Image (cartoon, helix red, strand yellow):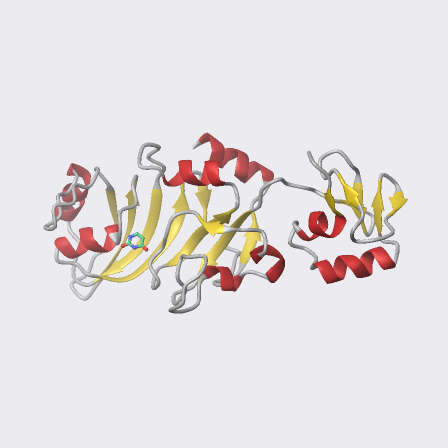
Length: 240
Ligand code: URA
């Protein structure tokens, strides 16, 4: 791999800002192949060099993958003149890496959103041909019934002509005052969960994505927070 500046390599892990890297280097806490680095501009091959920071080996990844627990009120876009985007929830070091959301969640939808700068795999995960499951927890008005489940399983055609692939509706609680369910889709058309349930006469009052393929929303991740994917999670995603 080509040589890159040390501050860029170390900041790409998201653990330190470029300014902090400078300070670490000044204190002699960054070693490249056992030799203390002298400046943040010094270059190294991040895949070949052994870089340690404060005694810990640096785990370099060519691409960054982040799991965000999206709160309501943020747009799934990289920039938007109309309001806050999910990128605003990440620190500046990460924002500079060209991350973009993998598919979209509506502004009022919460939960699992992946961000990455690895275009190929991101594209595969949202491609309708790949049929990667997307699972949602949903609350609706009215009582969900077995008939609703059958309509989802059969593949619905919406009033506006959208033909949906068979989907799964698993009722968690059904009550005339409101119901809860898990919905699993293998595609991701615009407002799809809301449109399917509206057509059944059960408008969505709350929507949260809880899984994408092999990857579940980490229950330890607070709303609005992010974490990096582990190597195993990333490898499993590639197998989806
Ligand atoms: N379906 C929707 O209606 N909205 C989302 O944000 C995701 C799936």
